[in-house]
Length: 284
Length: 188
Image (cartoon, rainbow over all chains, first blue to last red; front, top):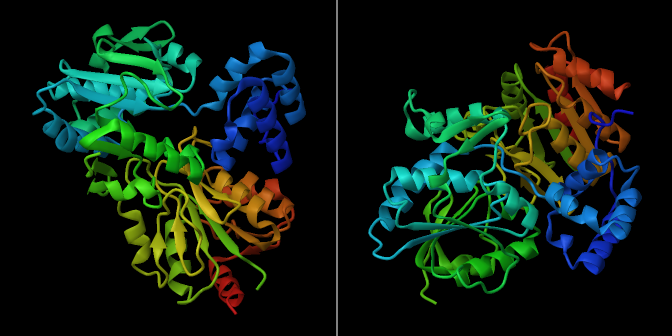
């Protein structure tokens, strides 16, 4: 039976609880931090993709085949689908963030948490390069998921996201003749980026807590990551960011994301409302 | 009052209809209205403003985790899927497009129907693809009320026709003026 086009498998609350419990016990991994609707959709997708009969089939596989877990984790994460997503944001990144950071005497540290398959990382690298500050920058790209980190290094991207990205880039430059493909090299099964865009990128697996290089950060680019977490976990994430961000450091979230109900929101000043760019306004 | 959620899905040819519907919903209309409309992904501004011109009720693009409130009209923001969650809150997602669409009508309908069950009203208007058909079926499966714009009136009949094919027997096939009359009667 071809299930590729099949509709979503409905997953009840008790099913999610059971799955959460199994994964917590066996893999010390907590999926209860994820926002419920997208979590259920991802799990339904995993069941269909791997041809399990139902949720119990997936649970059984997780219980009995530890080697399946990395793939499960990989398929659970939401991948980026384009470079220069929201061109207006990247103009604000260039005009608000890069212009300020240019005056830094020290190395500029930019942290991209939840970097997934690296679209934001490469976009940041290109934007920094075009602002002529890439050489004194370090991009720390982290994800909870080791598999995805491995995949992101010098990844070959599929051609179907090239056209969107080319159009985004033209909008970012506000120039119809701007050419995104100058950064890409064609490969047999897609396209890749030149090594120098990865040169100042440090990929790390990061699951929260203290980390030797993630501190004194000048800018956190974390767009459309908060949306995948529950409100309670968003609170924790923001607290963690506050601790790692330097005074006056920038925080960028997705344009429809919302940190206002988090306690730590009062430690930030919104400097660009439509692109949701904040600055940390307390020195602690 | 029976219904707690009204979801309207539309694509090509639906903008004028939605504007007309919004112009007739009275102040104090006490059921939240959620609009899942296909829109250009890179144009984030202007749509809310355009819909607000004739609307008595405030039209808002919800932020992630914002609560649904009666008396408001909510528009799915550009380039995000708009989900409705059990706590009566919205959730946004950048997951891959569905039916080539983000926002996908199917997803707003399916998640809204799951949460509000028989208290959901789902309305499918004009459009040139099949998005919304699965979602409307979900509304029906959960016991909600299903309305489809009369395809003979729709500028683009593909979407209403697909919804009728997929959902089977819907509650009402109506012209837009009848949809407006129907909605007005929901407000006690």
